Length: 138
Image 1: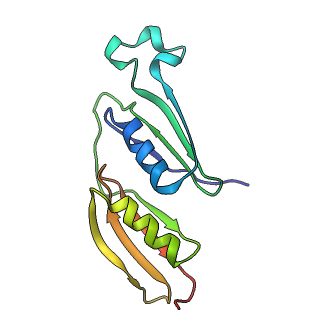
Image 2: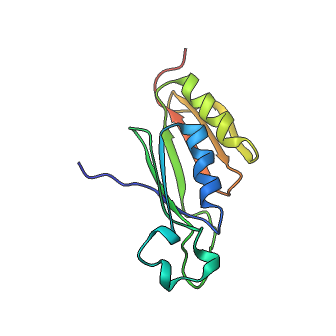
């Protein structure tokens, strides 16, 4: 099955961000530093501990990340949001609470016009999350 996996870029704090997402969402986290790759000898000493590639997999979600950005550096914008379709209200509220810690709650969890629950936030790393549970509310 073909799927799209979000790939997040960071500016030296990929390890911290992906560990935070693991605490919030669960799953197995694999981190590969520059120093652990064949490219290690081509990279400066200060880059050796940066994350070349990270994978967080909780069975339903695969979230990828890296500290590697082009020469223009990291440019943050509003062109990308991560949307989590939650199994139920309890899960939505738990994810919202954890992900918004240290960030900004931009749309509190509440009923949506489509009949489910919805909430939106920007986490402490500047990533925008949209959480939805489409099932009927109780």
